[in-house]
Length: 311
Ligand code: NCD
Figure (cartoon, protein in one colour):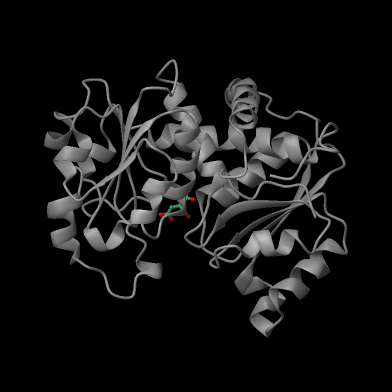
């Protein structure tokens, strides 16, 4: 079994805290004139993306390079997957070239977990189906903590297509470990009731005003049309009932922040005014993505990585 990062669910709170603390060390590196460290010199990271990605793939690659590692990025359309090769055979082929880690995104929930059982190469989950997206939840936590002293006691509203969102699931796992009051909101058919079982502080509502009332953080999600065969609402209806507009923010705490993992769809899940709003931290999330992925790569591939239990 490889030692990688498959999900937030398996991490303990101290492990999450350790990654965030290390990410804070890497934050100032992003704006230094010379950004390259040599912690991972001589290491090779393979990025294997079977699904579209702008932010995650680029920031994993930049994070690896800023630590001095070499990287190879492969997309499914440019690989032998398009010639019918199975996932296990593709991964075994890549593992035979002895990379130090494989960062992987796949549309099947559990795909990286399955592969991790067959490979010695550590696997870092960059999003598996509707299941988990651990580095997104870590960068989201870091972004909240840039503006709040602690996560404990905060109220976080996560709004949109919760059912198909690995971002929501990983965030619920992470925030629940810190005693956050989490409200999940969306159309009834996109609100999975089992998520309330993750922790006591998780509740569900179909009413957007109720979700936003008193929130410290309003996290908007994209409608995952690629996973939805039959959208419950038209684009116009969706925006009417679940699109975040400036007037909604009057219900939240006066210093509440607006988050979105991206890609955003202006006029669908949030208005353009909200996207460009002064308390929208969407680009800060992107910025923190590099620091968090540096911390994760270092933890998994770096000198002190050996012997750590798999998570
Ligand atoms: C998310 C994803 O792929 O799960 N994007 C991201 O990684 N920043 C969310 C989405 O695609 O809507």
